[in-house]
Length: 188
Image (cartoon, rainbow, N blue to C red; front, side, top):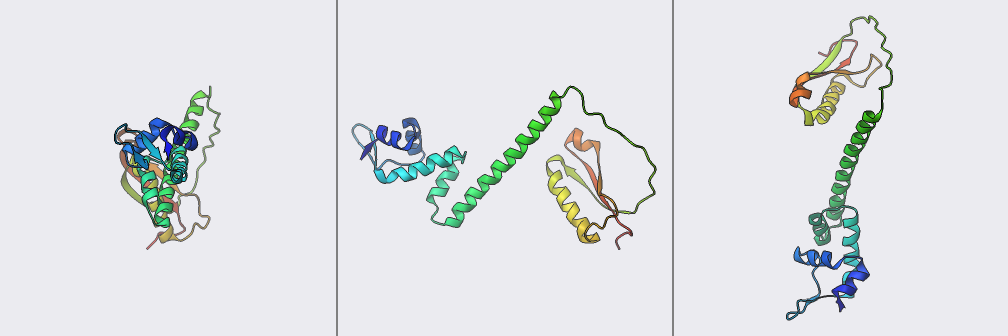
């Protein structure tokens, strides 16, 4: 048996953390002395503690660590890890967007844009329109593009897709969106 201090040194988990893990049922000591309350761990618990330590270093929430350790099904464990990877990727995308935005704020002047005005002939387009919440725009856009592709087939060089966004979307968080794609003839 290893006293909590020895176990702490061997696993690189602080005594305070080991106590917390015991309280939440994540890593229970092999034995707790009834009179002193001292916690004792076995050497067989070291690999489990190391897995917990590594998962926590990777920001896996305690509840997910517990579910990963308790699941006998490797596919379920892999699915839990995959969910965490998705969360991290979403956070990374948000962080990247914030960094890009902050860098724009730091630039003293925006890069000059050259705008050319020209007359273009009218173009036939197929469009999808709906009222959408700000948080739903990416999913709606993907669905609208898929709908246009299903009706029109793959893009065939008739021009780029485009869209119109209602100001209310940016002012109120909800507004009309219209997504269009040029086509040589309207769908029937």
